[in-house]
Length: 363
Image (cartoon, rainbow, N blue to C red; front, top):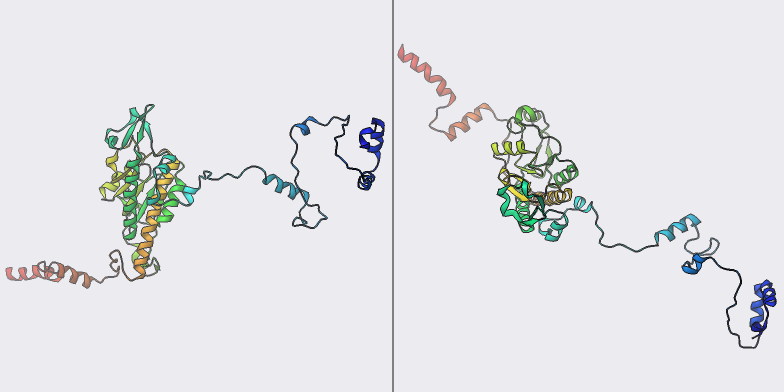
């Protein structure tokens, strides 16, 4: 071809010609053309030779397309976010807190990922936890996940039944970092929570400590009944029907008061805790916030299921608990009720009139 026969000077002159003339000459020629590389004395940068940049087709601002109203900064952001790979199955720490699983959905893999199997050092163990321990690894006790799953399902069933009967459930977790898990579990189960220091005497001396707390009366559908406000202020302090303690080691006083008042308790028992202090133990790691969040979420979800079942029964006109006696009762009604229960026992009027008759006979 003619291009091969040109010298360097002619090639430079050809390069100086406009590109349009070269293209027209190529199309006007009748000879067969071959594309041959032309060496240039100018050296390109090494970065371009090693990694060629990908060509991204971006519509110009004046051209018609879906990105006509986008400026250069927005186009640059779109290019930047399109780079990289998509990550699937990533760990999200808020998943257990926002959407906790049910007791039937808990698997051994989930418990293992939540670090519920890690215990304390062998020198700190309590011999009463030997039935919950699977083995020893590097001087640390390993808790059996089969035992953890079984006891967790049993505790969830207890929480569900107490909530279905309309009982009061108290979630207690006073360790640092357990506040969000305790509050979330109480919201699901529609119960109460405490994430600060437990005041001694709240159960044994509850009338003096909790007597000033606000109380309300609700119907079967949890609708507030605004009557008997004066009598309700003088009503006795309420006590929980079930206490869920997430750190029993620091709340020994709470568990002792629950035992004195016959209140059942549920607690996370580590290898250094005493399982006899709680009614329904759950062998697990109480130092891991992820494990505590998982267990509290499962118990809160069980309480939510019990509340939903109770409301469904109430909509059909069936109460799963005994209705409360009316606060306003006359003295005569109390006397009649007492006389009907104990017919042999004399009434108040007879007991007061008897000494008068005896005094007359003596006279």
